[in-house]
Image 1: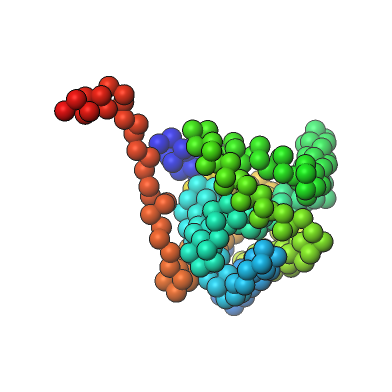
Image 2: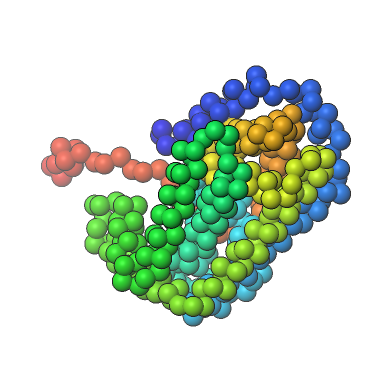
Length: 332
């Protein structure tokens, strides 16, 4: 229960301080002056980002010996993005697994492998871009933060190199996999992992460089869209600083419901460093409306074009039946 309400509580707790820091009259003034042409351009670039990711996912599946059209991948991406926006840590993104099981008859483990690799590309991109941004735009008077980022940067590269070594990667992945799965299903977990690892073996090859390139291309499109939002509000921020701020905001937004509070706080802090705190909340609200609400609406339309059973999102765990109760039932 606590896990479900924690993202909502965190959103509220992070948003409360902003209520007193933000000049709301200026925020509304900026929003009233929004240029709709730039907003539409920004939305178009975000959709292009998803289409490129659809190409990437289609290619990853091709590496596993399956053929799945880019259009199907795009529809599923948009649908699961909508689900991800309304689930903690964007867990709804993993509904892709269900589509692969239904359409390609993949096993659970094999479905998870391409889905996880696809997701990790995005997460790594944001982490790397956030690290590079902090090194390029260091926080004032905080050398410890810079050293911590450098250490994390080295650690991230080291783990990546180890993970893509087939033998070492297998050990690392199994350790993570077993942590995620329940121990009382160990035999079932081992079988799923065997399928998962066999699926991962398809990615231990030089061809993985093409999806990496597509990831870079998709984020160029994403940051261009975000920059269009800044231009629509006439915010005098550079393309690269805006990309850095959005990368950091996207990472912390994973922690709260719809990214509320955490995303706003990150953008406020980072924009304040360059004297743009008055525009920060207007930018955050515009990004929320176009990038979350409008995007989720398009995702819902895509879901109707490519539906899937969603009961797994609402399934409640059954309470364990006590031994005494079972014995009474047997006597009867």
